[in-house]
Length: 124
Image (tube, rainbow, N blue to C red; front, side):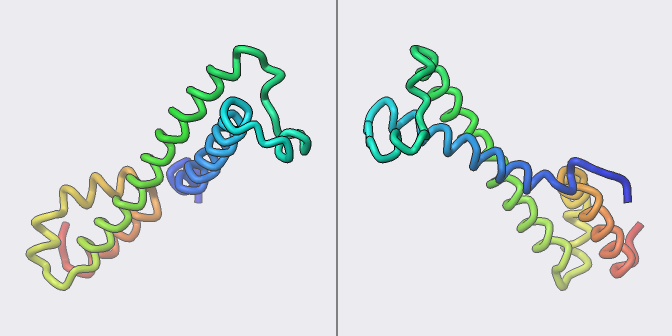
């Protein structure tokens, strides 16, 4: 199977969310909390000067963006499973266009599952 970003998008989104959340928490500590135990362990960004405010803002924005991507991915997987594994052919055919769009966003694995569902219901 050929490499596809779509196969690993969830893992990438989670990793980037964790990275930006950690950076955000470190800047919150440096700017607001000033916990010396954390600063003594070497986790500090206060040496960046005034750039810490930019790092704070950007890490917050990127953490929110990747949290949304994770939420959207999970919502797409849930709706795909509900629609493709239903017990009604009429419901499957009615939502086929939506299933195809969601499978395209989710990647090749879900496109293969959609093809199997199409074969199961004898839909072209």
